[in-house]
Amino acid sequence: MRFRPLLFLLLSAAAPVLRAQDFVFTPQWTAQAQFAGYYVAQKMGFYEEEGIHVRIEHPSATRSALDRMRENQSDATTLQLAQALEILDHGIPLVNILQTSMNNGMVIVSRRGRDPLTLRGARVGTWASGFGQIAIAMSRRENLGYEWIPIGNNVNLFIAGAIDATLAMSYNEYYQILQAGIDVPPEAVYRFSDHGYNVQEDGVYMTRAAYLKDPDRAERFARASRRGWEWAREHPEETLDIVMEMVRESHVGTNRVIQRLMLDEVLRLQCDRESGEPEFRLRPDMLSLACALMLENGMISREITYDELTGR
Image (tube, rainbow, N blue to C red; front, side, top):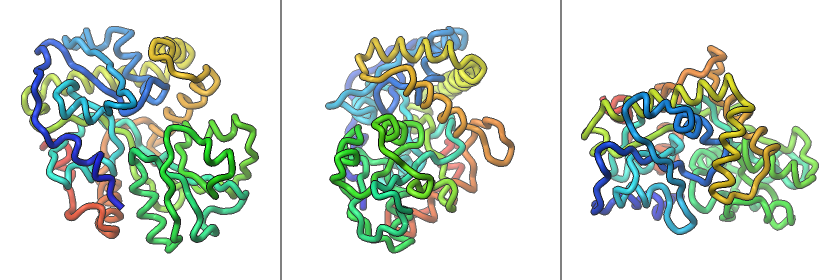
């Protein structure tokens, strides 16, 4: 299965040109604690201290983060590693300038209180916009025969019982399910990171052309962003204040409880399992795992190297 509409968003050339002193960053989704470190870096002046003026502009329902990059309205966006590999394999060179996720946060939640791996042929929700590459690879390797049902940005189909199970992020939809009062026993949750599919997720990416125009500028953005995440870890309540300010400005329907749960889980996923610390690095072994899974399932046509992905 390929998400071709997503993969080809960057193919056309740009028209408007960003002002040199600006750096426009577009997270891949609407305002939420998943992007807290960037909000902190902007609010606390870390970007300005690096000599760059950063504007954070979220995508809309009609214009995705990749749309904005294609049209040269954004310098950088966040992507999951597997998603970035697909895009790069289709001839759109990308450079990872900062890796925040050290662990995979994806889960399958069963509606029937059973281990999702026992539900062969089940109707399973997956995001219509992509992000499910590793789940699809796993289901094929395990011969599960899932019927993938596209879903939007909520868990309504799952709550209504219209599907047997759903993909969810441990920091987002999983908590939405629990907040809806659905009883989810531990055996009904399959965590990819615990079963040999621990592929890193969120990182910050630029097109290679944009990166090569000014690698130092990209490094300054990455350095300030990392500092924002480190500050968020040390000041979670103040960080939530900043997140909720962004949420209100963006008119996103959520609450502080959900955002606190999200922030805690995102920060947990940033800690490497071996060192126990946030390392902000792309791990070559996880890149190799992602490539192997995706090659095995025809999602990419060649292995993508660490040097290629990091712009070396």
